[in-house]
Length: 424
Image (cartoon, rainbow, N blue to C red; front, side, top):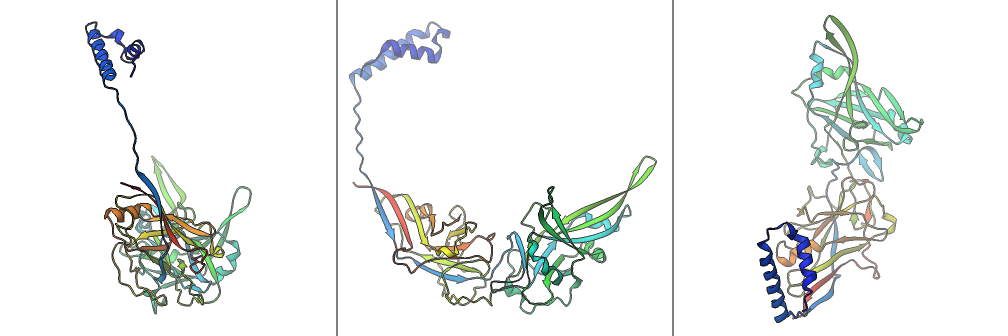
């Protein structure tokens, strides 16, 4: 190893600004460089990389894939639905309002509420024909839980004890500055309910349904859809006394109280599927359970997974580029009789969740998702392999589905693993 002393010294001098150091330090630096140079000269380093790492592929093709069903629950969907579509019945939808200081304006002597309106918004003008049959109800009691209520909770349900408001009093069509249609707003006058709405001891629950179970259908913006403008709301119009010094004036103003929770009740019991396909759909509560053979000793000892993809072919006719699929490893061993003809009261398979729960969109021919991290956890013994559950993301259109293609010999569902191991 040959050392260019002059070049090395100049670099060191520039790096540490030797010209600003005290003169006494300079000899020590020179000695250090000379010692380092001698050491390098007398004992040159000879390094040789000897790699024994190997790359290999492991295929798992004996996947066990089956459908199961749970009661649909769409509490975080961006729409409320009502009516019948694709053989699925949605008999009613609920909207709840929480507490607000503005409810107290009813008893505030400085405020004069002269109009109270309940408003719902929808975006499809072609559904305007369904509006006349729409009925609004109110109850001071709690009737649903946004996260857990399903059609199973409403067997024999009746609106007999509710306050019936009736059909909308007005339909307003909103346009932009160029007069292009944006959305429509349904308006009910609910002045007569203000004495109940102002009661802090009640739960403010509204419900909408059609007069009869016919072919009407409508989609309405839910409280998940926007930041407020199109959410379900109650708008108070009031006069306010404004006293400034000796002058007293009355101001006309309004305030909107937005809903705090809502839920459409989906009843898929009338849905007919003669093919009994394996797939996923929110509207009928269909999900998939997948198991496969894989444990800590499936791969060579000490293996590190470079990539691992689950690949399941899909029917192209069921493809949607706005349909997200969730895959979640199952947390515990579940001895479940997979009866695809009935509903489980709740999902029997508890998911591991973050960071192994993943969401992605399939392409037009297959669903491909990386399962590298969870398989590596199986190898390390951090998690146990109880399979996966695959389901539709809750914000997906509930009337869309993904159908998995399992009977094509040229397109076999599989897990493809590429891994590195030490040959020695």
